[in-house]
Structures are given as structure tokens and as C-alpha cells.
Image (cartoon, rainbow, N blue to C red; front, side, top):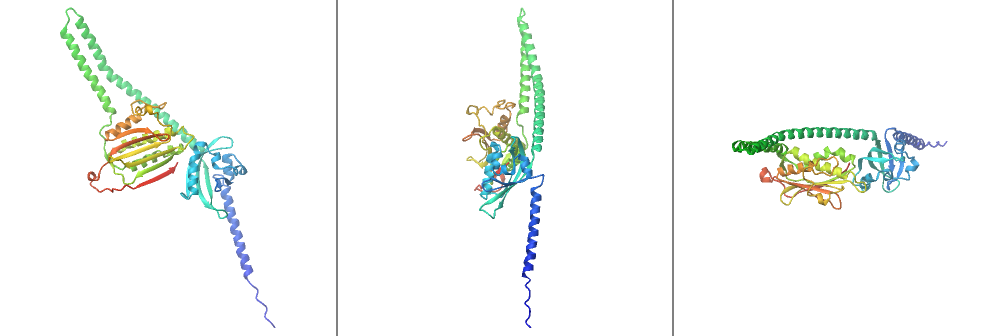
Amino acid sequence: MSAEPKQSNTYPKDRKKLVQLERQLRLNEERWRAVMNNPFMGISVLDKNQYFIMTNGTYQAMVGYTDEELKKLTPLDITPVDDREINRILFRELQEGKRDHYELIKRLQRKDGKLIWIQLYVFGIPDAVSIGQRTFGMVFDITEKMQAQVALQAAQAEIAHSTQASRMGAMAASIAHEVNQPLSAMIASARAGLRWIGQTPANLYEAAESFKQIIRDGKRAADVVEGIRAMFKSGETSRSLLEMNQLINEVLRLTNSELQRHAIVVHTELDEELTPVMASRVQLQQVLFNLVTNAIEAMEPVIDRSRIMKIKSELGSRREVLVTVEDSGKGIDPQEIDRIFGSFFTTKLEGMGMGLSICRSIIESHGGRLWASPGSPYGAVFQFTLPAILSRERGIVLGTKAKRYRRGFAV
């Protein structure tokens, strides 16, 4: 009797593996569906040409378009004109492999025309079907947060303006009182002198005493004015060795929220081996903060080109530290270049014209220079120099070859 052939166990094993794979696939689909159906975060997937491939219901509710309508659009189509250039730059860098992700606070225009603020996180995902990669975006609606922030900033600005106006009013009253006293005394003495001279015969002794009193009161008025001048002059403040690049980065961190709110891209080119300066940290921060905020305000009306700020530090030809702040704003009238640093000159509706004047006084008190020039092809360039502390003054050895790095970041 011949032996019966053994049955193969291959099929049951393959069947079991297939069942496991199907179960895993269903689990993955359920997880992906749960992510897509979340009510808190908008999700979008773009192709290599930046067209929407897929969006979830939360994203569609944010922008007011259906999934089918969005497939005919790109994010740029629902982005205000003045915010588009940053999107182009970042998306191109992502496609070219220069970055693997980016974050951005920006605005979107809904189908009904309403503008909303979003926090956007974008990264590339490999595409196994076609050449290239897909772009995956996660979006959070922060419109209420931004509106509250703008309202808070407006309230703070109003309070600051009112406080400043009150202080200026009190200061003006105090100055007027201090100066008015000797002036009133001088007028009274002059009238008395005229009366003594007008007598017959003229009382020259009393007239001479009146004139002497005028001289004393005039000197007292001059002393009052000099005291007021001294109050506004940059006095002797504590100075120490400072790294200019560190100060620049500190000011950029302080102004980061404003840079984000105005969708400004900042490029820095900082000399890594820049020699330090002997200066007052607070005063130099005041100068840099003023120049950066002026640049932000200058670019606010710009809607037809990128809002770009460039900040550069380097060692000048005269062995001095040179800092440049350049914007792509509306620029400065060439006829006003020499006037913008004057006291009480301003191009702002609510400005007092003291900022640049004080900045120049601070820089000059440190032995440096501050000047402005038109940008090319638009915008304005502000530069200042400060004496560099050389190696023999520091007691250490400095490198002779300056290394430079370039950083660009979108906010």
C-alpha cells in the first residue's frame, strides 16, 4: 500500500499573513481617518506644483471651499497678495531640498472674502508613485488670538501715547515755569531801569543796579536752560565689552512678534569673528530697536513686493564695527536725508521726531557715526559705526580672517 502524500502548510501560512496585513491596513486607515476627521486642525496635501490633492473637513470649513473646489487651486490663490512671496520662497526651498519643513504665521482669504489668520506647519513626504514629493500641511486657525493681540497692542500703544503726552505736558509746564521766573525778573528790572533813567535828573545809580540785576537774572536763565540740556544729553553710563552680533540677535528676538505680524523675512549676514565694542548695552539696544522698528513701519504699506529686512555686521575699512539695517519699504525722500536726524523732524503722523536724533546722539557719544542712504532699487539703508576694540586693547589674540554666515528666516 502506497503512502498518502503530506498536505502542504504553505497556503494556511500565507493566508494567515494576508489576514494580518489586511488587519494592519484597516488599522492604519482608521488612524489616518481619525487624523483627517479631527475638528481642531486643518490638513492639506499638495502635489509638486502646489495644487491641493486632498483636504480635510476642518480645513474646508476654515476657508469656505469644498474639497473639489480646492483641487483646482493652490494655497497662493487663497493668500493675500502681500503674503504670497514668502510662501513662494519657502515652498521652493522645500522642493529643492534646502529645508525639510517650515513654520509660518500668515493670512488666508476665505471664499466669502473674509481674512483669517493661521499657524501653518509644512513638511515634505516622499511620493512612491510619481517623481518628487508631496507637501503635507497642518493648519490652526488663530484669528481670535491675533485679533486679541492686535487689540491689546492697540490699547497698550494708546496708553503709552497718553502717558507720553502727559509726561511731555508736565515737562513742558515745568520747563516753562523754570525759565519764566528769571525772564519775568529781567523784564521787571528793565522797566525799573527805564524809569530811573527817565527821571529828571536821571538816577544813574539805581539804573545801574537794575541793569546788574538783569545780568544776574540772565545768567540764572542760562543756567536753567543748561540744566535742561544736560537732562536730555546722554550722560556717563556704564560701558563694557559687548558683542554686536549678540545684541542684534537679542533685538530680533524682542521684535519677533512684530516681524511675524507684518510677514517680514529677515536676512542676517553677521561676521562671526567681529571684534567687540566698548559701549552701553541698554543704549545700543535702544539704537538697534529703533532702527528695526522704523524698518518694520516703513514696510507696512508695501503690498506689491516682498517685505525683506537685511541686517549686516562687518569690520569696516577703518578698523571699526559697521552695522547695516536695510528695508524694502517706501524709502526716504532724498531731500529729507539730511533732515531726518534733526530734533522734532518726523514723517509719521503721530511721531515726535526724537527717535533718530537720540540714536545719532548715542552713537556719537560712543565715538561713532550714524547715517542713512536710499536703498536700491527701493527702501532705505541705515548704517552706524563704532570703534572696534583691537586685540592689544583686549589683551587677547583675535583671528585675522573673518568668517561669515548667512541666515534667512521667514516669520
